[in-house]
Image (cartoon, rainbow over all chains, first blue to last red; front, side, top):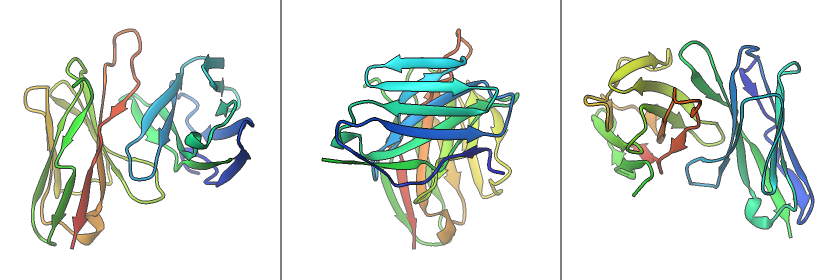
Length: 111
Length: 116
């Protein structure tokens, strides 16, 4: 079992719709959770982080964390073509607090 | 410039040569991470430093790889006797950990290595 799992996609949504991206993790002791956006040929850009169970909203983005079920999700409201990118889920865990990344979900927003 | 910087941005080398990359983190950040990313994969952890101490090194990292952060500021990553399998994007990230949270990592633009 991979430490951090994501569906590779592509996930296609029409412009203006809600995009829902999901991630599961294996280490129950994981402490912190991050979502990064990565455009092709560019480095990852941090868009959300969440430490506690529940929802965290920032503009059009909402991160949701459920530690009991070991999943974290990212909702993007009013999706725009500029949101088309790969979204990486990252999890911090372990005594040395290493961050492990999933392989990413490719999102395509269709105009 | 308040972001993470990396040099060079691109490096083409012949198999068997040594290469060295540099990363300058965000100035007040105490943690510095190195990752490797290949096409279609997420960043793969290589090693990280808290100040000048190297706290963890990936088991996947062979003895040909070495990293330093001598004064707790910039870091270098050296690959000796490069192989074609070393071709990848090498990413550096920094964070300000241990100050009421702050585990969020911010990435530099990366160094793309091509081994011919």
